[in-house]
Image (cartoon, rainbow, N blue to C red; front, top):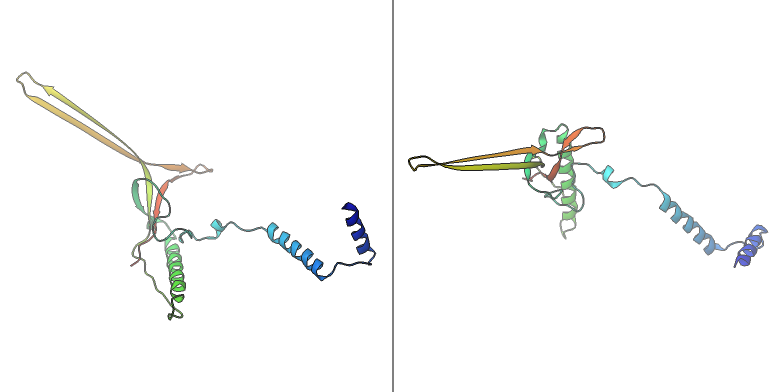
Length: 176
């Protein structure tokens, strides 16, 4: 087999045999395929807007999680632009879906959000209870119950040492 390749390469060098059109096309397509495979691609998670939900999730929760206390995410700065981006995303998606319906044609959709989304912060909860019962000399009883509970937020620590609350669930905004 090696002898065959060396003979073929020698014929190409001496210009006595040149690859035909099909062979040249095959070589070109193989080179193009290798170029596409090696071409760097950006991570799709970096390109998406944080206000726009990921493709597999629809209008509800972004991430599953346990119990916790709800915190309004509208308190963060720059949140209105992500809300507007989310509105535009929903409008484009609904408009394109309506245009596939027979007889609709071009559709323009306006969506208004009722509220900003909510983020649920994970909480550690500890509770204790204590009860005691006492009898006095006259036969009377006194019962005492003491209950206490404590909730603290769970924090994640970044590589730079900063702490941020752990978000266990993120709810998308409601649509009016």
